[in-house]
Length: 404
Image (cartoon, rainbow, N blue to C red; front, side):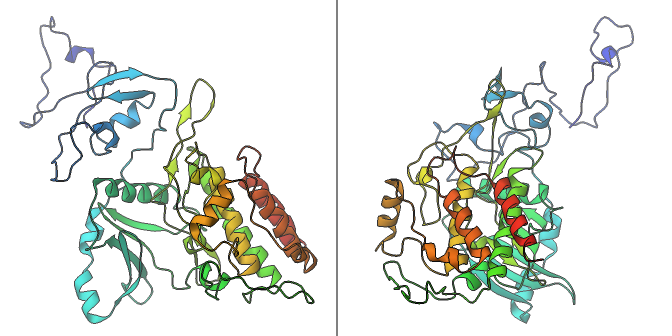
């Protein structure tokens, strides 16, 4: 991108006797218009590109990521025109593209599969993960688009968001490191310790299966975690999440917090991963606050009631989900175990029911009593009254000190 600066007026003065004519080597360069209007980027349209009535500004490849948006963060865009807006605007780094395709193309993935140095680690809705050994010391996780996935142009944005958030969080020790990103592929650090779900819920319980508590000896957790392990894991989850909510460049909502998102490294510490659903919150300049957003009705059993109800959301949805995680760590059991289906579970949450916690956990240890207190505050239905992640961290840190 070539910039004209007002400090060079002679380039624009037609009445000058000696007009400077820059030579760009035959390149046909279109400069930004007055007022930093955006420069439209011609893109190759794929067969399944959205219909003509789709707002092209919703497609992040439509404008240059790394120049216009960063240079002019105070504006909204409407086709090729510009209008000033003081409400719900993106932060400057929202549309950055931390791409380094060379690293991806240098990976000999096929040979690694054939010689056994790449092993299948799992898959999600549209991505597969393989662990690859680059040398004696380096293990990477190669996330690529599933060959059988039904490609949608929005998937590219999910991948980009994963890379953008991972890149700005790369200095944090409790966030999985990103090494490379290109289109529908990412390379992260390889972590072999599994995820927290394997340790917190080792007994697989089908929805509707109710396990009777021991009435004489109190509740019996279905995992083998000690009280201090439960407390430390809860703290490490909360601390990782707090890095997103406290990011100096603007609040980041993870939007997909569950046990499988926390991996255990070689030292047994948790690292948070997968930011493809993350939301970089917009800022309301007039009111001096972040704008809430809509996400369509949520699925699964770890989401906040406002997600199931399709109401405006903020970072407090992550706090509710953290409470679900802490319940699993505390008990090893299913939340609302008497609900026979996921639909019934969601209906009860939407109707204002709070998942029950056996209060006898308070009597087992100081650590478990602290966790029950926090979980109940994470599950306050009104997000404005719900505890924030920073108070959760504060309480858990003090509780861990109790055991030092």
